[in-house]
Amino acid sequence: MVKRSSFLLKQKLAAASIPLIAIGSLIYLVVLSITDDTAQGIFREGQHYTIVENPRRIRGENIEVMEFFSYGCIHCYNFDEPLTEWVNDKKDAIQLVRTPLMGNENWRLLGKHYYTLEQLKQRDRLHHSSFVAIHDRGKVFADVDNLADFFADDELPYDPYISTFNSPSVMGQINLADQLSRRFKISSVPTLIVHGKYKVAITSDIGPNRMLEVVDHLIDKIRAEAAP
Image (cartoon, rainbow, N blue to C red; front, side, top):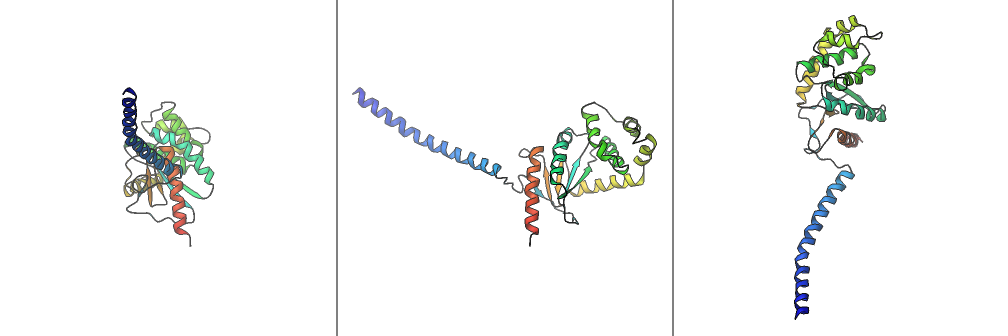
C-alpha cells in the first residue's frame, strides 16, 4: 500500500512539473530571442531610434553624424572618448558635426566657447580639455573672462579669445545651433542625428555606448537604400 501511494505521489509530481517545464521553456525561448536580436544588432524604429519629422538634406558622399552635446553634461563627457575613437575608426567614411545644445545660459556660454575654439583652430587641441576642466577639475565658468583666463596660453592668447567669442561669426553659429536643436526636437544630450534623418538618443534601452551600435546599423541602412 505504501509503495502504491509513493508511486501515485511521484506521478502527481511529474504531472504538475509539466506546466512548469513548458513555462520555463517559453521563458528561455523569449530570452534567447531577445539575446539573438541584440547579438545580431537588430534595432527597431521607435525603440532604438526615431525618424526625424523634418529631415535635413545632406550633400556629399559621406554620412553625416551630428552630435548634440554640452560641456556641462557629464554623460557627454563620458561619451566623448568612445565617440572620438569610433570616428577615427571610420576614417573618411563619415563626417562628424558637433553642435552645442543651449539648454540654459551656462550651456550657451559653453557653446560659444566651443565655437570660439573652432574659429581659432584650437578645437582639436582643447575640446576634450574643456570637459576635463569642468568634470575632473571642478571648474565653474561664470563668464567669458573666466574662460579666457583659464584657456589662455601661447597658442590661444587672451585678447583674440575674447574678440572671437564676441564676434558676429560665433553668434551666427550659436543661432544656427539653436535652430537645429528645435528642428530636431532635441530634449537631452548626447543625442545623435544620422544623415539628417534618424535620431538616436539615450533611453532605457539605449545607453551612451550602445548608441554607436545603433548608428552603425543606420549607416548600413542608409547605404543599402542608396545602392543602385
